[in-house]
Image (cartoon, rainbow over all chains, first blue to last red; front, side, top):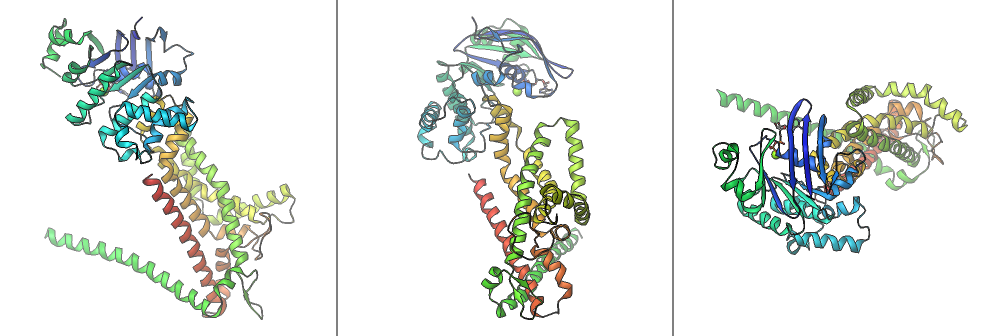
Length: 251
Length: 289
Ligand SMILES: Nc1ncnc2c1ncn2[C@@H]1O[C@H](COP(=O)(O)OP(=O)(O)O)[C@@H](O)[C@H]1O
Ligand SMILES: [Mg+2]
């Protein structure tokens, strides 16, 4: 069974048909990249998977998104629980304006995953270690997260997601506000995380998709044009639009 | 030519800025001069600890303890009423109410802020005062409690408008981040939005309290104006501001009574200064948390 199975999914912002009949099956413990020109609906599709689009007024959906065989758009779905299992990292790092420690502890507290100080301490440490922030930060855990560099902030946002132990991590252009060095480091981090999580990443940077992903989906004007192994998409695409895009003829 | 114009404008701005500073300094030094000269003849400690305010008797007694108690009691009561109502309303208006309701509520709050304090005073006198008298079975409804309700009512619009601004200016990304981690709406509001807006909310509360501490008219009409140390919130009280306002007209310029009123002004200034100072400390701490 695929980890995420999107079936004939449509999304409307009011009258605007932003996602048109998308079907795609995403396998477990792989990195799936979504590429396509800006405005083609990559973020919208990603944000449909954890239903964070529900918070936008006037959004309507038709179709299914199944996670481990359960349609998350079913009526009696516990959306908070869904979002805990499907973590999300945003385009601009958005750490909360509280301490580094509390940023990571937040998800543990609100989901009642841990309440004793020892367990929270331990999970905060483990999460910060897995994003390679611990060694630098262990003495400064009570400083405001806003004092960190952008790269560190993005790492912290990933740590905050990992802390609540999701199965799936969605990343929406996580490196777009970072410099090339920081980008490489975040990419390395994602490749390590792949062994334990199913990762879906939106990027407008084709080199990035080629570097880190195993599967790639190419979207255009709200439609899924092609979805296959990353090598295929970049070396031997079956659709003309994909070929034009990856060879840089438009974008 | 353009340089010349620039020069003129800069000079005008400079003069206006200096003028406002000069006015503040003048007012403050006048207050200081008249107030301090009172303490040459009367001890400061006695002034703020003595229980009796008889400025006009043969052997005058200048004890402002009852007035301080009156002001503190009425102000505290007003805060207890206005802070929860104000902050909750702000939260409701900015985060919970549907759009139509929100607009109506916002205009209502702005309308509330525009009511002159005398009007609030006399409306309170004919509504709240008898109500308090009957409900609590008191000899008179003119009490610190009625004053607190009135002043609370006056502080609410300030608190609501400014906290609402603060809450609404919390970046949407914070909320999105919290929701995406599985927080419920209420958890997001309480743990992230309120926390991020806290400096603004505290500023709102301080401004609300500022309006209340300085308020004179409404208080004078409602609190019963009895200058004795209150035993409960249902006793009539008199505040420092209303004492200055009522008695200044009857004093002889330069006399002890006259100077004592300036001394009250000085104490009032000191209290406001301390409150602001504490608020600043709190705000500063919150910033680099
Ligand atoms: N909140 C919104 N309301 C209305 N239209 C939106 C909203 N968000 C995105 N859109 C539109 O949906 C389309 C897809 O947007 P998006 O998913 O952000 O694209 P991408 O991430 O691929 O750049 C765009 O045409 C955009 O204008
Ligand atoms: Mg996008």
